[in-house]
Image (cartoon, rainbow, N blue to C red; front, side, top):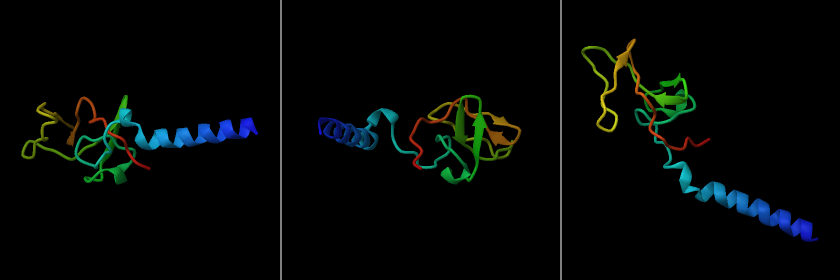
Length: 93
């Protein structure tokens, strides 16, 4: 009986931790430069994979430059905005 109670307590605390864990940061909104898992996570419908991170991005050109990311210039690389990192946030399933 003690084992069942311990297991129930463990499962309950594990679920609560997932819902309240603030260490993972804010929830992604799909904004430009947010973390993403697929194109469906991005308002631009463009999620790119780079070494170490995935990022919501958009097309760019000399006439349409990339918006800054938190005050830092983002280069246009091959017609796609390529930030040095993504904005850390939680991608919801």
